[in-house]
Image (cartoon, rainbow, N blue to C red):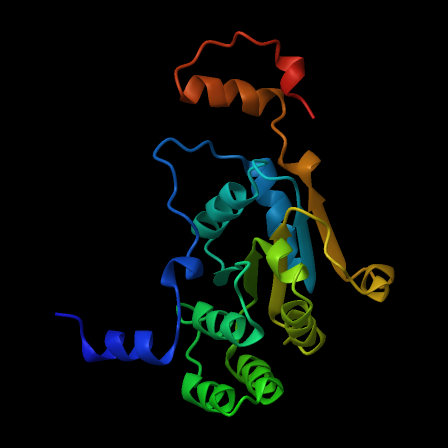
Length: 222
């Protein structure tokens, strides 16, 4: 029987919980220290952009890093159907494994259609509860960037983000970004070239899967 708590969560919060966790890891997964080190640099910047076409391995690389790094991480996957209120509910819930927030205060403000107040309450609670450097991963960020009201919500959070919170936006296109952040050196950017397999990684991948190397390795290089 479903518990009253779980039933209440589904009733009060239209959440899709699979959005709040990185996808399961493959049984045979190649460890790529070079890529992990590049992603770890996200903790040195307020904002990191990871942009590459579909199929480039963005989510796999992020999921591997998140599950193996040991750092506090909140994960939220965006969807095309998101409204600002629904996105905010998922952002709040994404922090459940990391910190304890008073979600009732935020929900009350959302129930009054006070989105700005709910967002400010969320930011204030993060300031008070984040005691370690924490990464917020926004996967499929291109859906947020394509929805102006959702993009404005994330921009408001970014403009008021706690010092210990680091945003990582992963998507298929370079999102709209205040140029001032780049000028200040507050942005760290990764792309398809950073995710590409080098020769050693390509050979290791073939070996891991017991496959013969029938292509010349230079074709796998960046």
